Image (cartoon, rainbow, N blue to C red; front, side):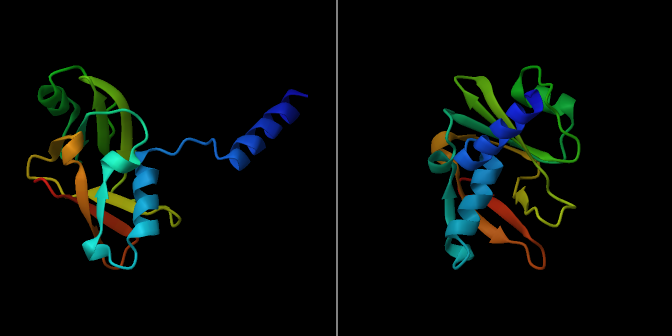
Length: 150
């Protein structure tokens, strides 16, 4: 009886569109829907596609370890991800969402996403500075986000 209920609930969620899609999914969906014809001219504004409340974005690249992140953020951080970058969204100096992005995906059905970061391997952006141009990586199903406010 419980298995039948859970199965029905999962099917209902799938068909109702209630499955949560994170920022990475929103970014990739925006690019694939709006940018395929003129990718070089396409801009993506996180302000318009991220659905939760936030006011600051920290983007972490692969080159940082957990101690460096704590130094930069000035607070304890325990959601460190090895082998991936992260979008860390803040609202009123509190972390409200962390989204991992994998620069090299080994799954054929996934698109890779990377961010063109400065040498320090991180970027802190205010919400109003969160516009990116997009570059398609040749010979791969991958995109690079290039901050326009660098």
